[in-house]
Length: 95
Image (cartoon, rainbow, N blue to C red; front, side, top):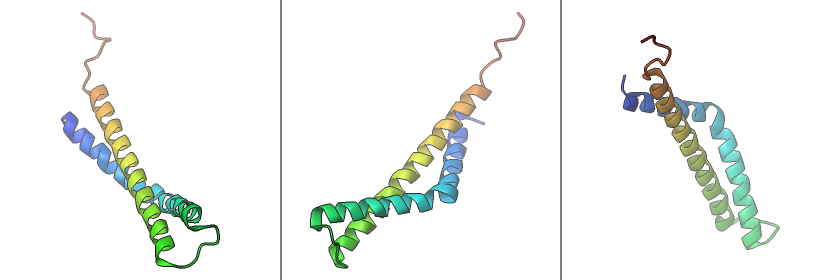
């Protein structure tokens, strides 16, 4: 198994972990950030208009995309690190 294969496997495992444990919190906190942004720009009692909803949906999209990328990159880095550690020659070998 090459380092590229291990990196891709790690990225896939990171994406799967994101779908299992990170998707809902990312959407929740992204939506909350969108509500805060909308209340800061449009005023504190937020109406049910199109613009506040766009801020909330945009926050959810940005939160989900950012956290998904974080999980995927961390998984790829972990896979590459495991590949390097597994393929390293033993330093305890007798000469």
